[in-house]
Length: 274
Image (cartoon, rainbow, N blue to C red; front, side):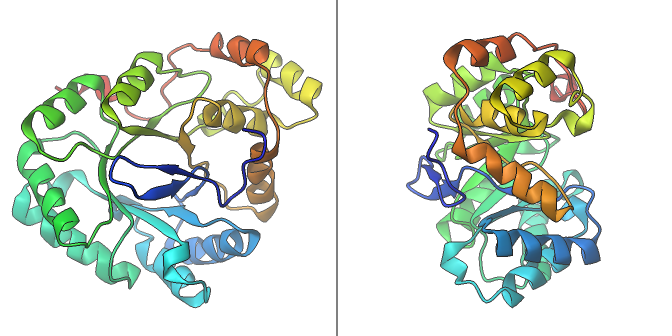
């Protein structure tokens, strides 16, 4: 796995390929999202993650269109917000997102949180998949119980579950479940929003490998066979994060990082959602 690049992909359960490292854009204002995405694409990123809730789809889409890169070389994800659940509401929300992005399709459309009307909402996404408006569909912040419900009531298994995942929130049971069901697990907030970057144990390992703490955490996620979308608005950090692709953490040290788990949620805990 030490020979990964920004072009490296994982194949989803419907044959679509998703780049293993992408750019997250949570809390990036619209105008700044434009400049950050342009920089990321210039560096070599080909996977960009946004959402209706982020209110930056217009800036993200403008950066994509003005980059001059072939659309087929890019992987674009956006998400459905909680207030738009329901079949009719979800379809209308998708149309709004697509218009803001200025694209004719997205590569992945996710249900952002497992809120109400999950069954009808998922049926809307299945329709978008059938019509080719989304090349793949999935969920975000779904626990095993939420996935069980969706899979049990649907004919399309989610291609992706995007969840908070880091050495300090090692969701081992969820990872195993997703592997067994053919769902790719994707990590958001892999850097704990900065809250554990100075953990002495992490710093010690980073020094051993000659890497930054952020690179160690991103690499750990990648070695779990996952996709990861760290966020940054600084060019040097975008380059640094991509540097997690070209080295390997030993199995012994990976196990040491496994032991960092403390169940740390830096966002809402979806276990609290019935």
